[in-house]
Image (cartoon, rainbow, N blue to C red; front, side):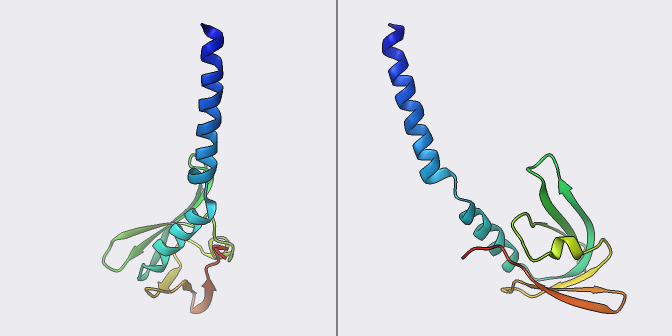
Length: 120
């Protein structure tokens, strides 16, 4: 009886693996989702926290507080623009809705970054 069960287990494992490859593993879709989430956000505020979340796949995370005192969290793991590396806690940022450009203002010096999630 054990010999009859093993082929079914192997066949089911192969089918599940194939389904995961076809439908579950799509990094481009994930990058597009993060990009659209950020693109749809309008923000004028201050960076209140910046860190790499070692418990969550080493995601690059930035927390911003807008002038209504709301906290916005961005996952920037897929961004290749160096925005995460350059921004500092206390920086003011401005991002218009439907844009991927972010203006950083620090000590009367401003620099604009265009997020690059490599979606093409």
